[in-house]
Length: 171
Image (tube, rainbow, N blue to C red):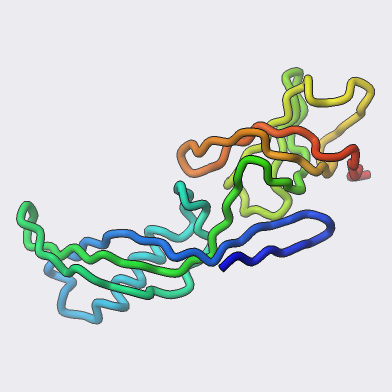
């Protein structure tokens, strides 16, 4: 299920997504409530991370726990296959985002997504994509189109172009 929120002409895309992972539980922890233990693990290890599925903003629920296989190569730990529902922020090539300028260099402009959590994405507009007579400064707001993106460590790296001539000055 896809939810699209519109706020001040920008688009923040949050997908309700069913994700999968494997959870390994040490025998020492097998005596308690397994469902609660797995839910806590998913919250701790998967929430606020970025993968090919997008940035997991929050985990709503654990929908399926299966497997429960004892590993032969370990100390008796049990491996569970887990499906969970999460709110995922995902950027894709061609998306339009509202961005705020963070730094202007001789090579181009670096921006942050207005709506995304801090540190999830870096947006770069090469100098040749900007109009020569355009005067931009830090904290100006632009609408950008994502031309290409990569995931590196725990953030999106996006090369963008301006999607319109609109620019909102911070002063």
